[in-house]
Image 1 (cartoon, rainbow, N blue to C red):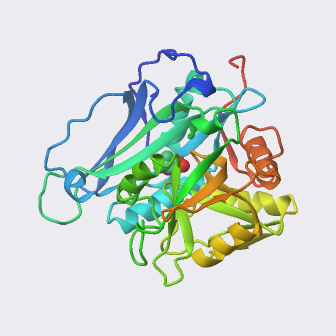
Image 2 (image 1 turned 60 degrees about the horizontal axis):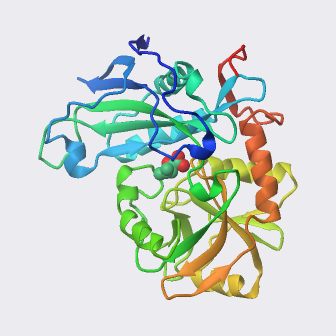
Length: 361
Ligand code: COI
């Protein structure tokens, strides 16, 4: 399928200094758009970023039939630009669409959309530690108040020059405080916790906002099992270090299969760091934080990369301190960003070059 290029090229309107870009607010001037009608993907195109004309009864606005992805393009050490594991995002976008009763976007269309969107914005990709964050979205657009799947969809993608997700990590790894949610859950078995449904994020907003009053930048959710096992955070996965072993909850029906999570598990093995997929029951987590058996913890995700966790707080007012950033987190951060920015060999074929090296640096 050919993508029509109706984009208007213009240089960045503001300085692309990664330490000064607030995440999620600076947009590249063009977007990718494609409609689904009468059972077909139609008219894929790049065009100037503009508001959509959406019927007030569009199904997405009433019943949250919406999914999204997040992936990044990195300016490489040799001046080329590469996407990091976009095939994994294409696969997850497919799985999210199936779960939300939406027509899956073919992998070739997804990959062409994010590659072309990056290519036309090559001058909007900030230098390290920045990147171009890509946000593919799929929404149900049919005007219908009946509770059923839409027959029409909009697949679009935005590009955002980005620095750090957490301002606390603007110069690299950094660290944040995290509130452990004991009153709010984000997902339950049989729900949508293992796909990237927009509604998963809506239900976390209240407690994330409350957490900010305790100076916590994020919230860690526990699952609904009687043991209240550690699950994930509001938009990223979590890892711990215990006895030198990297621990992270396994992927199940309530945990999102994070691309960076998966990458870190593979890279840890490459580096000789033992890994174990295990979800601590809350009581065990608290005991191990108290005794010092857990020596490090960090958030990981496309937006967050690896961000150290300095304190874990409970809603009951307990506070556990951790050395952050810790040595294992630092080692993994250096290696992961080395692969993303092309400083270390790409042993697993994760970089997809979309702009070859040339004079633009
Ligand atoms: C990402 O890491 O790309 C995410 O989707 C998390 C978030 C910003 C919601």
